[in-house]
Image 1 (cartoon, rainbow, N blue to C red):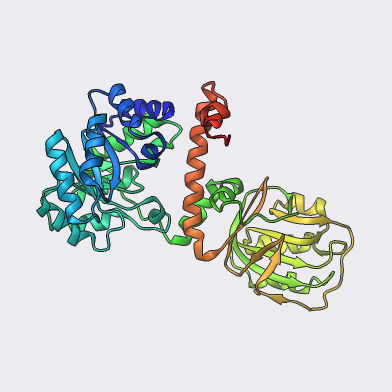
Image 2 (image 1 turned 90 degrees about the vertical axis):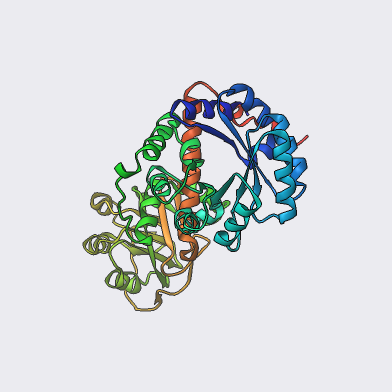
Length: 413
């Protein structure tokens, strides 16, 4: 709660008009979260995101008596719940916002909610939906053409998308993570404020393909961030950097046999620029990779190499600089017999790797990201990264990690 108040102070300094108390904070701290914010910010509009789906009157009353000015219910709640919440809102002098998060037909429901009499409709894409690429602005455009009720918008907004939202008809722009997880909350809020006030001045650029966006995010985050986002999954075991450097790319896989380096070298010819060659070679005592293969890979623009097996010519490959991760180094090599397979599903470092999976390596090790979830997991890793930046900032101000996370509060007794 203390951290939330401090973040809110910084956001207000950057130009925030309203303070939303999010559902997780309300679940964690109860109505005291609203009371605390009301006391700390008597001149700001306090929005309580109750996400009420039943007992509308009771929960609106709870939030109103705690000091909320606006209370959020779920737009998908039954009409009887919405109407009872409205009666309670009128009774206690607060406004009612209906949130369209996960509504099956948001445009249709917005029209219905306006007819019921809500004060605001919030076009909201939830965090989990954001992670798979959903965006509220396109839905907002459709809804703004059908209703006259004041529209709010929420869901992964930054300065660019906030400007798009205003142009699409939003009167209220709700921003969470891109402010609260920033290491400079005031500056982040100020950028949003500027884009909301002058949306026409914000330059909108094409972000490129999904693959390009994934790679850009993965270059920014660490393997530790990715592991956290994957709930401790994906990390290779026993694989360490021989040539250090950040590595991001899509896998071309090689299944090879003890000391047979034919398929490992042939994979270079099949790889595209930006690929990572991932090799399983059943022997850690005979090298299947060395300096000549490394130079060939550089010529093809390969992003890096991961080998469960052995590498040699360490002096040469260190000078060449291509990131290489392996389980062992030895001086002796085998022979190119031609056994094995390229672009089959393999096990490397205890992880299943399929062709096209995203491979990320840094000083901490190597993680495998299934291609089917690459966009989602990259976005989730970025959220972990932003949270850690915020924590670093708080620790630099003099706190300890235990104090900031209030570990003792959450310890099991």
